[in-house]
Amino acid sequence: MAEPVLELDNVSAGYGPGHVLRGMSLRLEKGGKLAVIGRNGAGKTTLLNTVMGLARLHGGHIRLEGRPIDRLPPWRRNHLGLGLVPQTRDIFPSLTVEENLRAAQHGDARIEEAYMLFPRLKERRKNGGTQLSGGEQQMLAIARTLMTSPKVILLDEPLEGLAPVIREMLMQAFEDLAKDGTRSVILVEQHAAAALAFAGRAVLMANGRIVHDGPAAELAQRSDLIDRHIGVAMTADAPEKGTRHASHA
Image (tube, rainbow, N blue to C red):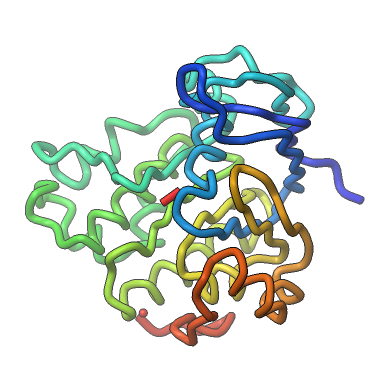
């Protein structure tokens, strides 16, 4: 078994004194693609915030490439290789696309890589954040995270509120990000079919705990689990792997 790039060991976490995650253990291998699904309130966003240092860790340990990061502030975790694309996107509206990218750039990150991933951003590189559509803002949020040279990319519901054609474009971009095996991706997503089609492994969360952890293709066949813990049947809005056409916890 490959060495994990990210490990959570018996983690409990939340906000203030409150607990949202309880006894969570998780491993992500280098180059791995992990889908995290569950209904609103299951703890999915808190999981990403805990990894990033934005939630309070009440117990357990978090390691990045074998190094404990439990006590490190978010900016140190970012410099060590964690990159979060938040659900709120948080781009700088008064800056142009290129200025947003340059503001986040460090290490050996190259803006041209972001433009290759999202050619539409290159076309709009002089446009301000407020001049972008919702899909373009999401592309910019993802591209800006790439400017931090992440080893692990944490995506928090990146498809929310977007048209199917844009969702398909983003899912192809996620495939491209992970294809060389140097980056690992955790995708938190309400669009369960899309997330499971993308990932090699998946976890299903309920009430701050993992209730299923295994191959994504296996979970995709477990409609009983999906229905019980998400409450809606799997939808057929996800692109198949390899498709190249433009598609809360």
